[in-house]
Image 1 (tube, one colour):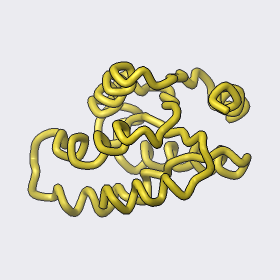
Image 2 (cartoon, rainbow, N blue to C red):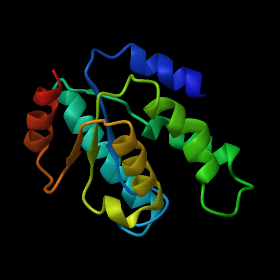
Image 3 (cartoon, one colour):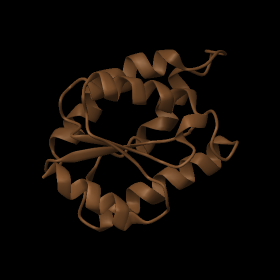
Image 4 (tube, rainbow, N blue to C red):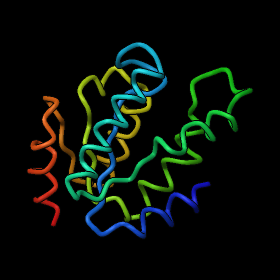
Length: 138
């Protein structure tokens, strides 16, 4: 599945960004609302011509793989997100509001900092803020 995601990313026109925000912990308090918000931001950015890795399309399959794992999904971070972030194919990370309430987003933040990836903290719901950051990556 990681190879599939990396292939998908390699087909995107650089620079490619990844949104980071709550999914299974923090945020709005439930997976459905967190995923809906994440997807809406990805969709709005894509519609404006930004290259965005859409990790939401992998979430259901990842949940199925980890269905018997009853603790936090650190295997998901190590198995799926670590190879993506360390691949060099992600040009920058955009952290959604409430990112710091999420275990996974904090992990992504630490990895992003260690890789010296450009990081933007989305303070509002405005996609124009993402576009401004994206232009700095070109």
